[in-house]
Length: 117
Figure 1 (tube, rainbow, N blue to C red):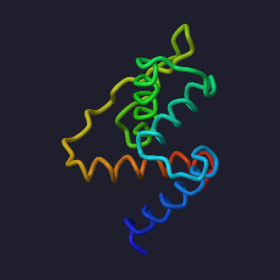
Figure 2 (spheres, one colour):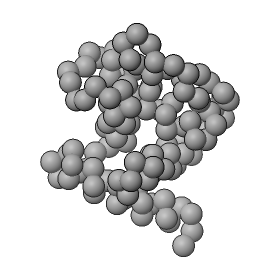
Figure 3 (cartoon, rainbow, N blue to C red):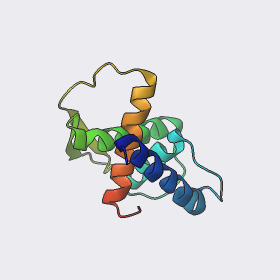
Figure 4 (tube, rainbow, N blue to C red):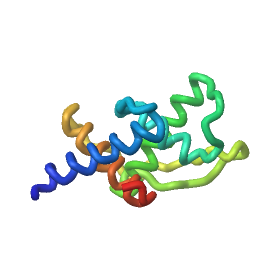
């Protein structure tokens, strides 16, 4: 089985799991999954967040997702317990489809680490 086919199957399996747990049976889109990871990484639960906080949660998720690929490294928690990351390597210029594949690969890896899939 090719790497791309395995990624597709793992991602589809993850979508099914997340739809049941968080989407009332409806599949979550990529942004919703990234937001969910940000909430998980912050560790404060699903409370009401302001618009700026939601953007920051998605940033936390992206940093955490790309950390294993060497782009970011956890740095510290601030006084409000929000994690901060430092950039180790700038992301390469990727086409939209390449960005999507990279983030899906990172999401699958994240949920494998969390033993969800």
